Length: 394
Ligand SMILES: Cc1ncc(COP(=O)(O)O)c(C=O)c1O
Image 1 (spheres, protein in one colour):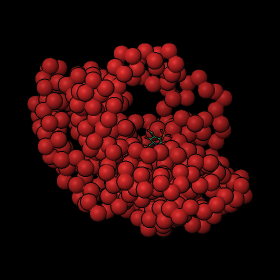
Image 2: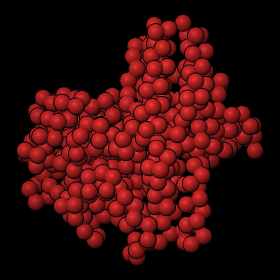
Image 3: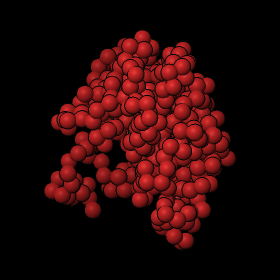
């Protein structure tokens, strides 16, 4: 089916929740995707980090194929051989906690909110402090947690017990804490918010403050996790350990899965009947996630992120020297933002026409997050396209 026909079908039958580009994707391999007309694109924003290991990674595909020959779904009132294995792996890679599995980032954060409320129940604590410009999902609780007004508009009344403070502002957190505060919830690097990195000193102080007041520190690593910043989890760059962490996106290498990891003593507050997900931690999703972890470990992908992150950053710094409308380059590893003085939407659209997919967030930040398997050659090609597009903006 040609693009025009596909788009017409959407217009007639699909609820228009998304702003969409006129690109109908047909297939993908590594850092490349092809549209239905056969045009090739270099994907430097693969599925908002879902296809973080590139499209259709062969080992993940093989693991899903192998599992699909045995059984598709095992309900959570029985045991499946892969869920425990995946939980053990994630626990050992992080801070030794226990896992709950679901299907998306919002669901993982929703579970974290519920767990925090269970933790605070006996002391009458339920209030959660989150950060301005954060993004945590689109369910009613996670959009309330999200620190962006536009995400909440039209959905009142919102659930109680959420407060937002400016990011990287310790005084603001101190002032917001009350006797009812149970958790502080944040992304170590705000993705949707414009690639804003957490300050090390601030994070250290937050950890101390949380320990002193028995407040949970929760990291949303839905976008930053699974190698994106050169460590398995972004918090490992800062050596500050959270009490709860959430994951999704790259975790399944394209297959839907979300996870919550909590320190053992907190995790066990979620007993039978407190929370559930019919599809959560199914064998296909766990097979995919185990293959993703194996790929990151065996193929030295964390090293690749550090090397290619530095290379890409250097190339972007060169563009900054050439174009005065570039204010700065920010980010960590392969999670990079190019801050512009001009709106970035037109640049994204021109790149698309020339065969490069990138993202624009907060109107003036180009978000560039290539798959963590990216090569120098692919970076050169992307920079070449970006350079040509920016030349026209001079
Ligand atoms: C940091 C963060 N948290 C949560 C979410 C929500 O994830 P999902 O769309 O899988 O529900 C996103 C999605 O972009 C995200 O970037």
